[in-house]
Image 1 (tube, rainbow, N blue to C red):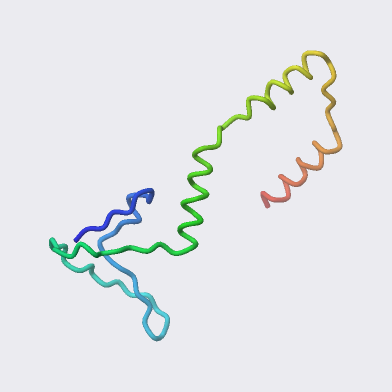
Image 2: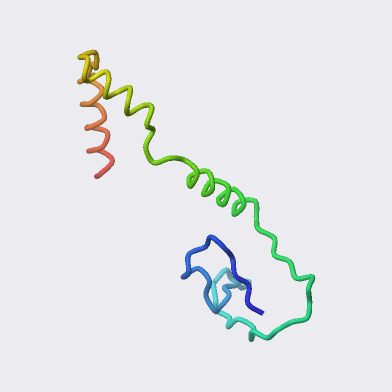
Length: 102
C-alpha cells in the first residue's frame, strides 16, 4: 500500500526505510512490497515537529513577499526628502555580513 504525504519534496518519499540498530549504525531495509489492502483503518500520525513545520510552511505561503504598505511609506519618505539614512547602522550590518561569510 502506498502512502503519499502531501507537501513533502519528491525525493523524500523513497522506496526504503532507515532503521537504527543496537550499535547506532544506520542500515537500509527494503520497503515492504506494495500490495492493495482492505484495511480502511490505516492511520499516519505526524510528529509535533512535522506539524509545526507544516504550520510554518502554511503561514509562509500565506505571507505576501512584499509589504506593500512599507514600500509605499518608504517611497513617500524618499520623494518628500524626509528619509534619513543611518550610516552607522549600514556600516555595522555590512561588517556583520562580512564576518558571517568567514
